Length: 125
Image (cartoon, rainbow, N blue to C red; front, side, top):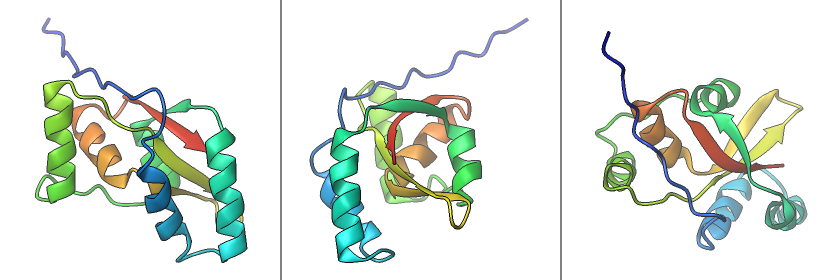
């Protein structure tokens, strides 16, 4: 029996600093300025946790972006080279029953193509 070997996903120990403004920009489209400021403070003080790629997709209700997406392809190349990725920033939107991917959607899509059961490093508030 042939055993399938999955590519190991490497992670930075903390969210890359440039990901916070990206999340802030996205969230400011959905939430008030004061609520987004609270969220950003929460993210900085929240520990890294782990969820399976397939579970994040199910909870977010988003579609998987294909390899034709430039950003997904760029992240796939990082994974193939063994370069670490920045953890995702997630938000529990309990009112709508979904998880909002505030930052890291392209990284999630790239990882999912390698292994849908891969554990994703993330911060969730």
